Every structure is written in C-alpha cells, then in structure tokens.
Length: 243
Image (cartoon, rainbow, N blue to C red; front, top):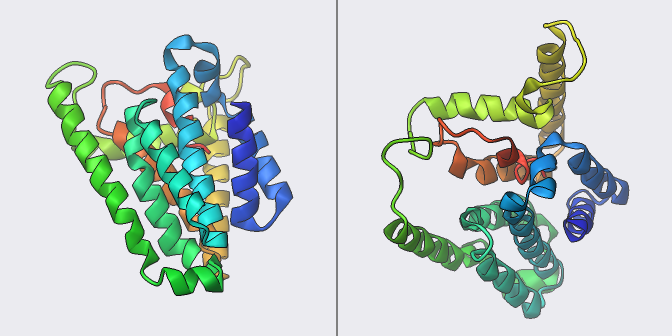
C-alpha cells in the first residue's frame, strides 16, 4: 500500500501538473473509510495488490506517453498481464488506458511520440482482446451464479447500487457514524460534496482540462464490474474506484 500511495502521488502530479495535488490525492485516499478492510483483513488483501498493478501499469503508460520509449510500454504490458494473478477486476485496465489516451494523452505526448504513434489510441485494442479472452476463460472455469448473493442482475438496480456506492465514496461507509448527528446532516454533506465535485468537473472541462473527466471514468470503470451484484454490496468495493 505504501507503493500504491507513492504511485497515486506521482500519477496525480502528472495528471494535474501540480505536485501538491498528487500528494493530497494520496492523503484523501488514505482517509477514505473503504480502506479499512483491505488493509486489515487478510481475505481482501488482493484489493491492495490489484491496485498496485492497475496503478503500476497506468504509471508506465504515462511515462510512455511522455517519452515515447518503448520499454515503458513493455513495462505497462507486464504489469497488466501479471495483474490478472491478483484479481479479476484487472480486466478493466484497457478501459482506463484507452480513456486516458483519448481524453488526455493526445494533448500531452511528446513530438517524437506523436510522429511514431499517430494512431496511438488504437494501441490499447490488444489489451481489450486479452481482457475479453480472460473474461471468457474465467466464466468457463467459474460460471457466474444464477441465484444467491453473487448472482448478476443487469437491471435498473445497477443505478441504485451505483448511487449507494457513491454515498460510501464521498461519505462514511454504510452512512455510519459513531456520533449522534441530526438525520439531515449526512445526506446534506454528501449532496454538498457531490455538487462541489460536479461543479469542479464542469469548470475544468470548460477550461479544456479533460483530466478531470478521466478521473470520473476511472471511478466508473473500476466500479462497473461489481454493479450487477445487487445482493452483495460490500464496503471495500469502492476502495479502488475511490482512487
């Protein structure tokens, strides 16, 4: 997790151009309540491990975009492939890589990189092929449950699940607090924080800074695989999206 925090700080600084922004990104992640179980329960340490490979692969993608040096692309691929040994959630990495490339990377890449890789957004397609192949093989080896807590429900309930996970991301898990608070205080606080984030996103997009939209894509992409689990909502599922 210390390595993860270093990666978050480095990635945050590169996305924003501000070292202090990367530093506080790591601090806010530490303070998020979703980290209690991954850091305190052996059963879900793979959340921390998966985070290391997702962040590591993305870090090398950033270095590849900045320098055009192919060794960083190979390191990205290495982290991506090894990540499948940590957690199935690793399948979402191609979405993260493609989103960055399309939203941010095109504006940041060096002239040398631009000359070498004019069709660079399509370079993530082989990663999608790997993720799809892994998903098919995984489903063959361990078919999805049809009933019970791990049954997948691709219905409108996914939006309710997303809404609840969002409240756990910007507010306390399960909306629990050990202190007595007026019933209106937590929902109001969550609404205020959410409105602030939305306003910040709109402000940055109007200024042409699409890194803010990429961060929203990260959240939704990394959370998406668990949204169909309507009957198995777990607090640590927002640990990696909250990055």
